[in-house]
Image (cartoon, rainbow, N blue to C red):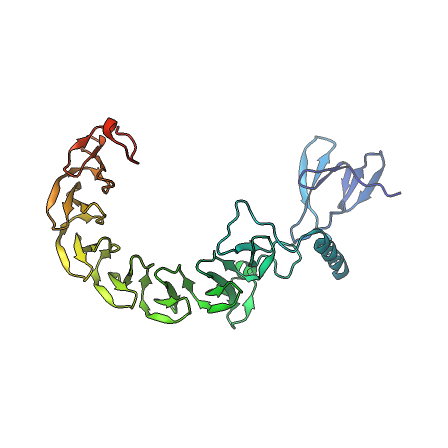
Length: 371
C-alpha cells in the first residue's frame, strides 16, 4: 500500500518534517512515522507552466524556506485523457453573468474551458444560454440595431492568431469589424478602430486617418481626419492638424476647421474657441456671438448659456446679451428654470432666470440643497 505525505490544502503546499539535508537530498517524515529520503517531493500535476512551491520545515530552529520543484510534464496521452474529463464535466456553453447583458437577443460570452482550442475567444449566446455565434473573436461589443463591433488578431503576414499570442509575444495586430446576428462580417476585421454608430455612421480609423462608414461598410466620409467623434444631432466634431470643426452626415463641412476647440451643436448653437477666446456659431457655421469670453458652455432648452470673463461666470441669451451679470465663481446650466451657482464666498445656492436667489423651501427639482 502506497503511503502519501501529509498535505496541507493551502496553496497546494506539501508540509513535511525534515530530518537531514545533505548533498541535495532531503529526508521526509510521514504521518505514520515512516521516512523517505529523496531529492525533492513529487509535485502535483500542473495544467499550466507555473512552478509549484514546496515549503520545508527545519526541525532544528522551526524556520522555513521555499524551494521550487519543476512540475510533471504531461504526455500527449495524459493531456488527451484530461481533455475527455474536461469535456465531460464542463458544459459547452459558459454560464452568463448576472445580471444578463442581452441586446437584440444575444449576449457576449467567453470560452474559458482550459483545453478548448477556442479558449479565451469570444462569441455570443442567446437568451437560453445556447451558443448562437461561435467563439472566434478577440473581443466583442453588444449588439445594437442588429450589428455588433468585434475584433480579431493577425500577425505581420496577415494570418489570424489567438489574442494571448499578442500578449506574450507582441507580434499580432488587433483589427476591428462589424458582424450581423448570424456572425457574418458585414464590415471585415481590417480597421484599426471602430466606434459606435450614431445617425447611421461610425467613426473608423484606417492607416492612421479617420473617416465614417455606414452599417453596410460603405465609406460615407473619406479617411482624411486626424480625429473624428460620434455624430450628435446630425453633426460630428472632426479635426486636422489640431484645428476643429463640424461636419454633417453627408460629410459636408458645416463649421470650418479653423478653431482650437468646438462643442457639439446644441439648439442651433455651438461654442467655439480661437486664440484663447470663446464665442458661438450657428448651424451654418456663422459666428453669431463674438469670441470675447474666456470660456463658454452650450445653450440648452432654457435659451441662456454660462460664459466667463476673468474667472467669473454669468449668463447670456442667444443674442449675446448678458442677462445675469458675470459674478459667480462657479455655475451650472439652467434646468427647469433653475441653476446652481457658487459665489465668491464659496456659498452655493440656486437662482432663477432673472438671477434672483431661490429659497430651498420653495424648490421642487432634482438639485441638492444649498450650503
